[in-house]
Length: 247
Image 1 (cartoon, one colour):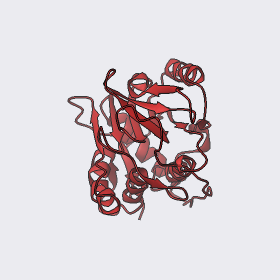
Image 2 (cartoon, rainbow, N blue to C red):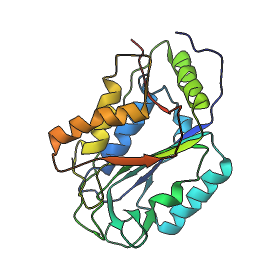
Image 3 (tube, rainbow, N blue to C red):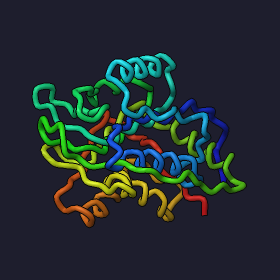
């Protein structure tokens, strides 16, 4: 495996998880952590994962965002999983931090948190819907290690280093739609995206842009009424990595 030089990338995974224990955000969190820690997901290490923020207040969430922004990381992957809605007045997706409260943060409040940014939003986007969404559960932490982990990490970090400074937001559904999932499995969108990464075989590196496109048919198979969408920096021609083929 040719890693084409050594690049040290300061990267972090940050997660905002709704505290509704009846649905699947915790499963999403566990599944994503297991994925990035795996060889296929880039062989991250535990120190690169912030403790998930479950059911925190808006003030606490904004304080964390400010602290992380000040650290000026090279790359952040951010997950919002749980309940949310689309606010037509702000033209933004609101993520509900605590069940049965109006404690929310908006998608745009995370945009400048790092030089390179991927935001995964797995929540409903129905205008002003503050109830009845879908997501949460418990999952086991397990990931397989190989003797190539150092090389895999370097390949993954090199790809981040070569990518344009950019942000990319990926939403589990379009504005006006509800986001689905299962308690013990997690969100339909995120589980489909992770499935694409885990099953990647055709090349050395799968970018997040291509992974997203490949996940759309899987989401449709599970829920024909859910249409993931996204937007990002204009002119970003070198995209961020999502999966490494270690076979």
